[in-house]
Every structure is written in C-alpha cells, then in structure tokens.
Amino acid sequence: MTRSAKKILSFSIKALVIALAYVFIYKSVSNKAELQQFKNLLQTVDQNKVYVTMSAVVLLMLLNWLLEAFKWKYLTRRLQRMTIWRSIAAVFCGLTWAIFTPNRLGEYGGRILYLPPSKRGYGVFTMAVGSFGQNVVTNVVGATALMWFVFSFLHLNVWVLILLTLLAVSLAAIMLACFFNIKWLAVLLNKIKFMHQYERFFNIIAKYRKRELATVMLFCVSRFAVFSSEYYLVINLLLPQLSIFPTLMMVFNMFFIQSALPTLDLVDVGLRGMTAATFFSYITSQKLAVIACVSSIWFINLIIPAIIGSVFVLKIRFFDRTA
Image (cartoon, rainbow, N blue to C red; front, side, top):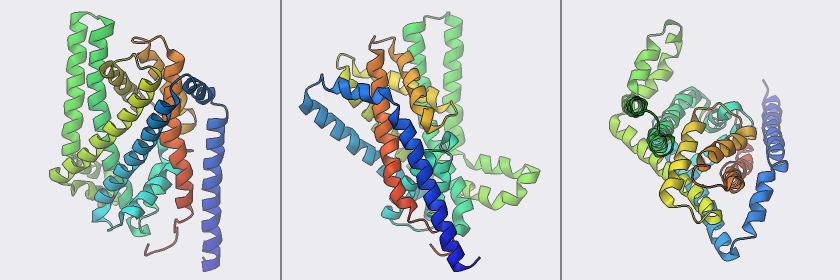
C-alpha cells in the first residue's frame, strides 16, 4: 500500500470512528428524559451546593481516568516506556471507541493503537490484567454488599443465608487467588492445543509478579473509591436524608450486578438506572431521583470522556511502525 493510500485509509477510519461515536452519543443523550429530570431536580437544591458538588464530581471523573492512565502506563512498561500524557491520550481514545461497541470492547482497540504495531497483540492481554483487577475489586466489594443487603432486607431461611455467605466468600477468595496468581491463566491457555500459536502473547501475563499485581490492585481500589464517591456525592445532593453506609452499599450492589450484564453504552444507563432503582427502593421511595442521579454520573463519566477522546482518535498512527 502506498503512503498516500495509507493516509487516506487512516483518515477514513478515524472519521468513521468519530462519526459513530458522535451518533451514539447523540442518540444516548437526546432522548434521555432522566438527564432533563436531573436538571429539574437541581433547581430545587441550593445552587451553591449544586455548583460545588458537581464541580467536585467532574474533578473526581478526571482523577478516575488519570488513575487509569497511571495504571495503563505501569502495566505497559514491559512493552514500551510511555509518558503519562501519551497514556492519558490512549485511555481517552479507548473511551471513544468503547461508546459504540458491545461490552466496551472497543476500549481495547482504541487504547492499544497507541502502542507500536508489533506490541499491540501483547497490549490486549496487558490491558486484560488491569480489567481483571478492576473486576476483582467490584466483585469482592459487591459480594460483600450483596450479603449485607440479603441479611438486612430479605430475611431468608438461615440455611439459605449460610449457603449464600459461603458462595460470596468463595467468590471473593477465588477471584483474589486468581488475580494474584494470574500466571495460572497463561499456563491454562498454553495447554489448549489450538491456542499454542498465541503462546507469546499469553506469556506476557505470566511475567507479572505479585508485587506488581499488588500495585495494579492499588490503582484498581483507588479508582473504585473515586467513582463510588462520585455516586455518593450526587445522591447525597438530591437525597441528603440517606445515610452514607446504606447509600454506598446500594451503589456497590449496583456495580456488582452491572458487572455481570453484557451491555452497550447506549443502553447501559437504562440498566444502571433500573438496577439502582431496585436496590434503592429498600431505603427510599424517591425512585426517579435515584435514576436521575445514575444518569448524570453516566453522562459525566462516559459521555464527556468519549467526547474528549475523539480529539485523541485523530492522533492515532495506524501504520507507524515506530510510534
């Protein structure tokens, strides 16, 4: 392929990605009555408090993705030494790709394109380590929160409670053991005959030591604390009568259930809203306020970053063998 043809193809792909992202963003936002409802509800709250709270939430959103950028920089140091700015660009680029792909799979593609072509295959499995770590935090905390919910509100048979507790503890233990021994996954994949051709990619997973995985886990826990705080601040803004502990427990339950559901960002907010409304119905009758809060966080955490990321899509070098 000639250099001119590569430039045309590269520009065409970038234009298509940005166009798809903006179409999905428009469809996501234009018909979201929950966002308008959130705006209307804010009119009933002291405006100084609204300004301070929403400013804090936006700053936390930026901190959340900054932590993810530091985690990505740390994870990829075996592949390429990159600046924090390049890591930030990769993360936001991935968010733009994620907006229109099922289960946010496009985030992988968008992010690894900031690696040299020869390292992109390794980058997929490197990113999988970070994603797995984030899922471990979500599921361990979520399983704990779900048990609190069951014991507090469902009043099940004692043997059922014991069984559920054992399942929750087992899930947490297995996920933590698998993460801190992630080389088991590489060994397992290498034993599958038709996967042998990808052995070199799997082996990148096995190179992470427990100390490195502990650092990755620290980033994951920090991110979890940050976006949990975002939810609490917004919910507390509209529903100040709710105590912090049950509010956070319900948020953790929402994360837990949401992590198990395949989805698309276009409909993700609806699923989050329904899940949150179901759990929060046990501690408040303000269902619409809860759904409005969830929608606002979805907009701040995913839609705004996806728009920012479109700038970094333009900087991708599809055919650069050295970048």
